[in-house]
Amino acid sequence: MTTVAAYAAPAAKAPLERTTIERRAVREFDVLIDIKFAGICHSDIHQAREGWGEAIFPMVPGHEIAGVVSEVGPGVTKFRVGDRVGVGCLVDSCRECESCKAGEEQYCTGGNVGTYNAVGKDGEPTYGGYSEKVVVDENFVVGIPEGIALDEAAPLLCAGITLYSPLKHWNAGPGKKVAIVGLGGLGHMGVKIAHALGAEVTVLSQSLRKQEDGLKLGADHYYATSDPKTFEELAGTFDLIVSTVSAPLDFSAYLSLLKRDGALVNVGAPEEPISLNLFSVIGGRKTLAGSMIGGIAETQEMLDFCAEHGFGAEIELIRADEINEAYERVLASDVRYRFVIDTATI
Image 1 (cartoon, rainbow, N blue to C red):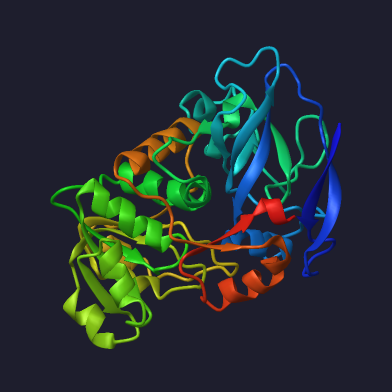
Image 2 (cartoon, rainbow, N blue to C red; image 1 turned 180 degrees about the vertical axis):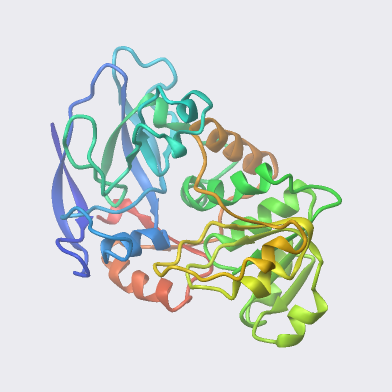
């Protein structure tokens, strides 16, 4: 066991505070990672404030982890000391179900283990990346290519893969018209990735406040959803719409923007249930779908893709003692576009 410093929420809705936690001793197939940077994801806030249901406290959030390997277990073959690595939203799964065998560990039916706010197979709670070190099985660690700076790579471990997976699954690419709803931590990665895949990219945002940014990031078009004319003008336009927002939308209005056989895919997860008039999917054979992160192999594929195209996330680097302020700024949409904690300040 190793004692490390971390930032934790002691209880639901309580401010995060500096503390210490225990990390397990390195087992045969484990990798010990010195965490260098940890992204702040909106889902950290949902969980620390029990927006998605009962949670485990104290909670050390953080599933956008970038660091360097400092020790490996005797059975490890995939990584060596000194390697640049990342850990995303999962640190284990059943490894035996159909999803796991297909490399889709995020849909594990036997029960996957989250990087934090979960219980590992050893019965111990998991603690995330707002900490100095983490111990993870090598099968849930990915390599970060040299082409991406570690601080800009951290948000790719959740925000990057959360957008890459549905864009690939629904065949975003040349000749396809793709809309990204919301230009935040998730949305800005959607624009970069969809553009790099060769799709024609439109941002649908509440206002035109971030229009200049959106176009610089690779969007071809930018519309304000607060303007009713947007929905008239864009009716029947898109092959694929990916919604990154965690507020409830007027789904019938957004479904009206799809072509026949188009898909509206949700990666943002509102805390409240939605209502839907089914005629908005029946007319046009449309799909209302969801997507959750990606498997470990696809996460590695995404990192390699981003390195090949020369981009990471757009980040604002913060000190650990600024985490609580950063949470409030995320809720106020006051970040361009992902906060990343410099874990040397913990």
